[in-house]
Length: 101
Image 1 (spheres, rainbow, N blue to C red):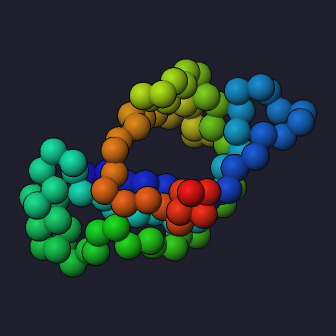
Image 2 (image 1 turned 90 degrees about the horizontal axis):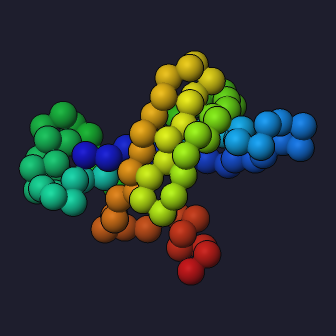
């Protein structure tokens, strides 16, 4: 299962080069590509929908990107927590990706 966060981001002129200001506004739960049926069933059992855009209210924050390439990103959140994220192939495209296509 993957949670995809969405929202605008900017890099402020006076900020450190690796700092990105993010404002998460949506998330989508995406079934695992390795076992999509099990993921879907788990979501249905919990009363959740998958690949449905869900609005969230979160204040703007920042992340400091420590490493990024075509397959992964490592960043430190404003809280100090370190996240290691891998790029996953999804069976759907986000609204932003559809707009760019």
